[in-house]
Length: 306
Image (cartoon, rainbow, N blue to C red; front, side, top):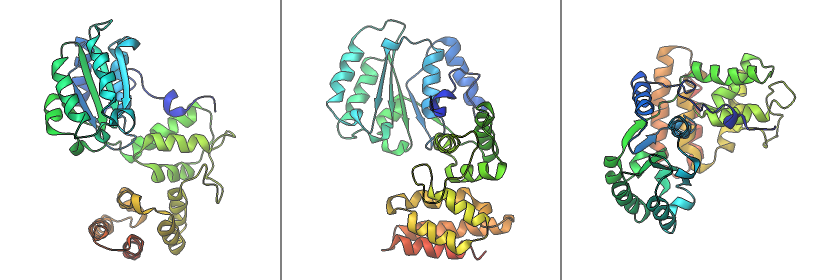
């Protein structure tokens, strides 16, 4: 494993980036042509390409490496002390036309201290500094920052395109795989492409994509095991595994995963509509019940009885 596939296959040019919306592609192309960008707020689910788009823009605009400041909103940029470093960066003249501050996970920045300071800096240094913020939850970014940025929602790729992108990487790396095994990984990780690529890389070190061995949590994921069990018709075993492995703090993600894999519960449109209603009911109940595992188990009983 000389290099992470996530980084190796991260698009660096406009032609390499997969846009879900033609209007967004035209907008980004116009920025590259003009050689400038506004302040940007890129938001969407994990692994959908927010940071990739930001880095691609920096590359296409030929921004000098000394004119770029990277920060993480859940780490250093969460603390008000980091603002002093940001101010110093903004105060110095750029080597090129302007500087760029790229803040990943900006929704974790302290809304009482860091975000207000950021709001003022975005105005004071707008002639020489551009800010690119990425986040999963734009509602956690204060309105004055929203008003200073052009907001772009990064849509998830559909299942077919998602599968094709992972398959392309495997073919390029000369890794043998069968479609059923690949489908297990896609169902377990979708729509997080970063997670899916990491999983398939970890489980194809011998030149063939394999499912993780039983109990091998280092290179496995409980969703992979659940998908395999559901496909095999081992409903009770899958239900027990799902309830035992899902942590309380990730329950919202579990319901989303069940929604993203509606065809596990039914192959008909009517059955999938029924599954949506059951998942919604379980998600609503989740915020009110005292035992999240019992609620999840009850939801799965209803789903598997469709």
